[in-house]
Structure formats: structure tokens, C-alpha cells
Length: 496
Image (cartoon, rainbow, N blue to C red):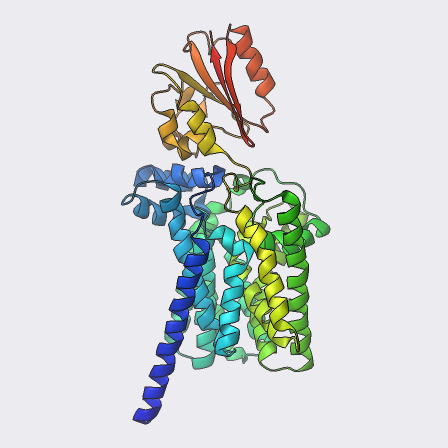
């Protein structure tokens, strides 16, 4: 290689990295507005519950529940041991991870596509509602998506260069991915499907098998722990082929999780999500049809993108239809970069009007993105408002939390609002029980006999035990003094 060739290669490499960094910055600027507006919700309160305890207690927790989030919890614990807890500090790591994914996707797409098309793939990822949701979500989805993209990039580079070190790094990253999101084990299976689709020589497939097995061994401790923790997904409705198709077509990539209705009417954000899902999959289909008619770069992109999106969701859907339902759209957030890649390939394949189609797609994302940045955007949760209602408490007041689902998570999300009130039925704290919300004594006439004269009671609007609980308070001589009703939580001050 001459000095001119080396110089040109370095210039191209520097140019690619500059483009990747620029896209990451643009992504962060796009997502950041409104990051602190939504109230923390149950899942994010679970993160705070986990990271707010000692390291030994965190290990005990992940041995009992949430092993699949252990790596993420450890990362956020280090982060929040330095910075104060807030909506911003909790969600900022996800925003940074998502921005890094946008740049990594650009570098991955440049393997096959021009700079403009690779940038289009990154922009599509930035705009997808699943991405705009997980970029401000204090959970592990953004980190898992970054790891999935890096893992795929390492395998792609290995197939091109055959450097053994890349395969070693691939195995390590695959193991990390399974430790962050157990369903990423099926992404590795998808990589195997890709190698077969590309007619990779059997010797190289065998080497990949060794690397994949090594990654499985690295992630084995998490897999073994999580195998006995299926109950953490809760009781989910049975999965049918139709409900799965609806979730994949909309919630998985073009809606994110159901937002609130504060500023954007439900009809608008839901209609936009449905239209976006329909048009997006149509564009993807155009790209796949074009690749089939004229096999070239498009077929290679399809070989990498389709298994990344479909293999994990199909495998988990099949398992859910045979046994209990373990499918949830948010667990497949790591497929968003692949979907964006396929979407960009489809836009490039449109002979005329691609700019108009791209603008329509971008416009359809806006109502959904805005709805994700409203005060009750996290599935209607209102923990911040509920905690503010309790801030009117007096010294010596008690607090009662309904348990179906556990309303105590509000006090974990916003502890300031509950300072000075006595959780008089608490028997084991979350750390003592190695759980996320602790254990309470059952509410009964006996348990409230010596309770404070003023009790702040908090229930989820979905709590089926509320009427029975209120009867206990009335029979014990309490009367309602104040009531605050929110979209997810109700707060009542009982006085006797």
C-alpha cells in the first residue's frame, strides 16, 4: 500500500467517524427536549429501587428477580452514586446509549450503502417512535440496542476481514448482550441465519458457531438465573397470531409503549402510529422486492436486517403460543436499528417520490414523539403528582399503599413527597425482602387500631381491593378529608 493509498484510507475513515459523531449529536438534540417532563413510572421506579441499595443487596435482588436487568442496574448504580436522582439523570444514560447506537448504525450501514443512504438509515432510527421512547426511558432497552448494533457490526467486519480478534470481540459482546436482554440470544441465532442466507463457507460458519457458544457461556449465569424468574413479566394475556402481528406492525417500532393523552389526543397519536406502521412496512416490502428482482447490495442488507428483526420475535412468539406469554414489544427494542436499515433500503429503492415518502414518514412520527413527552406519557403514570399531593402531610401522619399493583413504587420514585410520613404497615423493606417494593401487613381492623389519626391512602386505579380497603377505614372510624384522583393513582386522606 502506497503512502497515498494509506492517506486516502485514513481520510475516509476520519470522514466516516465525523459523520457518525455528527449524527449522534443530532440525535441527542432531537430527543433531549422534554426528557424530564414525563413522570417516572413503575418500571423506572423499579430501577431506582434496585440502584438505591447496597451492592450486596443488589446482588441478592438479582438472584431473586430481575436478573436480566442486573448489568443495567450495576451501570446506573455507578452513575447515580455520583449524581443526584432525578428524571434527567436517570434517563440520560439511555439518551447517550441511543445516540451511540445512531452513530454505530451509520458505520454499519456504510459497509453496504453510500454515505447518504447510511445517514438515511441513521435518521430513520432516530425518528422511529420506539427509539424516541427508549431514549428517555430509565430502563435497559437503549443499552441493549447499542450492544446489539455493536455485536452485529463486529460480525459484519469479521465476515469482510476474517480477523480472528473481531470474532473474539463478537463473542464477548454477544455474552454482554444476553446479560443485558436475554432475548438477544435469539439475535445471535438470527446472525446464524444471515450467514446461511449469504452462503458463507461452512468452515467460517463453524468458527462463528464456536464464537456464539462462547457468548452463550459468558451469558450463562444470567440465563440460568433468569430462567426461574418468568413471573416478573406478570400475567399477560394469551398471545395469538393476530395480536402478535398487530404488536410487531405497530407497537414494536412505530409506537413505543402506549403514551398518555395530555397534550396530543389519543386519536391523533394512535392514528399516526397505525399509518406510520402501515407505510413503513410497505416501504420495507418495496426494498425487499427490489432486492429480489435485482440482487446486489439490497439483498445483503436484507440478509442482515430481516433475521435481526424477525428471528427473535418469531421464536419468542412461538414459545408464547405454546406456553405462557413472554412476548412484550419493548423487549425487542434492539431490532429498531435493523428496521431502520430496512426502511432506508426501501426508500432508496423507490424510483420517484422517495423524498415525499420520507417526509410523510417523518411527519407521522411527530404526534407520537410529542405524546411521549407529556406529564403522563409513561402509560398514564402520575407518580410525581401523587407524591406532590402527599406533600401536604403533617408530622406523624401515616401512609397506606394499595398492593395490586403496588402503589408503594410512587414513594420510591419520589421519596421527597413521603418524608415524615409513617409507612405503618411496612414489614420488610425492598432491600430486606430482596424485592422491588417490600412487604406490608394486610390492612384489617386490627392493623389500623393503633394507626395514626391521619392516613394518606394511595391506590392504583386498577386496584381491585380498593373498595374493601375503604370499608376497613370507614369501619375503623375514619372519614375522607381530602381526595386527589389522577389517571393512574388515587390519593385519599383519611382522618378520625
